[in-house]
Length: 379
Image: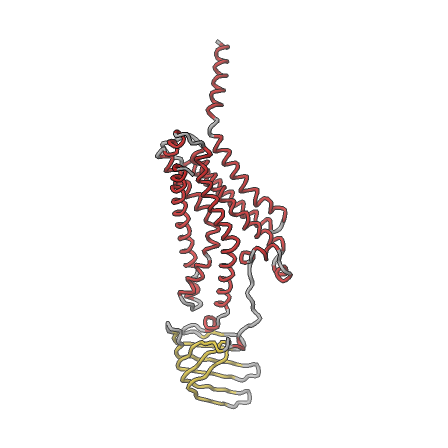
């Protein structure tokens, strides 16, 4: 790139980076608000909430990158056109291809970033987030313990905790179990803490007592200073992490095993794979439409609001149609081809409109000449 092209590249690139960062910040804020449930209802730490929020960022970026590119390019191109810097570039001898080359190089960079996210960052982050969510869902400390409430668990288990401190210490705990034969066992402790011993979950009780009332009417009682309460019998070990198509690697989508095919159809997996490969193409569509909105018509001192609104509506319509094609491709495999055709065709049409803006004057001159001949003959 020459000096002017480098200037255009920097001007557009800075606005695109700012737009993508702003959209990403809004998305992260929305995700963090959704993850507040992890702290409020599941009793997890703030770090877990932050971790889940950050793991959602790659999938969020894959969605917002084309929109950030479109918005940032519109902002930069509007300023360049308003200040007549593009006019000066054309007056200096630059062709239209030379002017639009830096924006499309930036679009190619964004497309490569989106491809990397789709192929590597997103599946890794989604799998980590799914595993963390599964661990929270099966965490007995969060499921069975709620401050000031009697919580019923599996196999006749009921737990009550008067107070849960910030360091995880449980105050004034009560455990009640009623077995199928009618035997009732209870534990009460002044304090307790969840621990793992050799990988198994335990509830370590301190300063408490144990009572057992058998089905024959015999009462047994025992006082203890420290007693480990095994939670393994109440853990469902048959549960496994189930991944969605967005969590799978490309090799798993294109060549799924028999176990995966029992959960998802091959057409659905192929639709997800083609979606990841075709989604980066929308970066070129976004840039082409932004260029057509600003440079696809005559210079206007009053702004380009109408042309920008049309371009924004067209890009939004194309992107929504792309998501609809992904869903339709899960039922009709041959529609996967249109996942690539749609963004390429939209970009080609926008580039056609961009260069077509040079021709209307010639047509008007031709018609005016004909009208002049007709008027002369009429006279």
